[in-house]
Length: 152
Image (cartoon, rainbow, N blue to C red; front, side):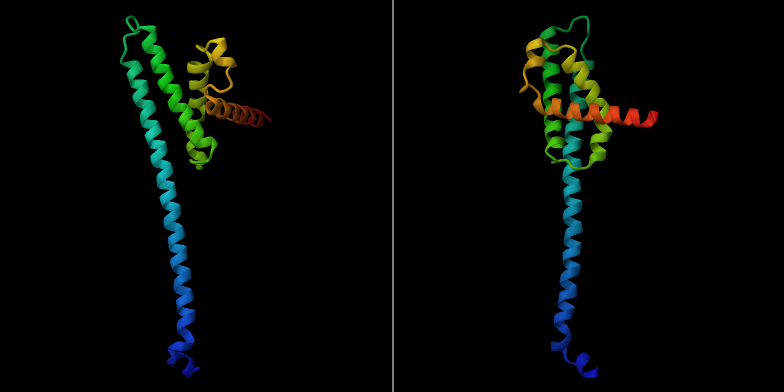
């Protein structure tokens, strides 16, 4: 046993392998934290953009606001939601807690700012806000399941 400890050629490869495993674990944790930060940064940018768009609407005087301005505002909001839906649908943002945080708002925004004012042409165009429609359908189904599950 003394010869094993006194000869680094015997124990150095094992120590090197252990150090490499520790380094891999540390690296994996760092990559995971970096990915989480990227997701949170994306979410924060979209959230800030939605707040900015909402503030633009609330800054308008309803009595003097032109319909064209409201239509522009609606388009900005729906395009921002379309981008957010794309990120969630294609798992660029994987943390489902972020989606759950927005779920009720996305349902409400879709219903109030897309479905209610949409023309029949807009509603029947499957390519218009395709990602938002897909996410809305998923959230509505999840919401209905949750409501039905809590009634039982």
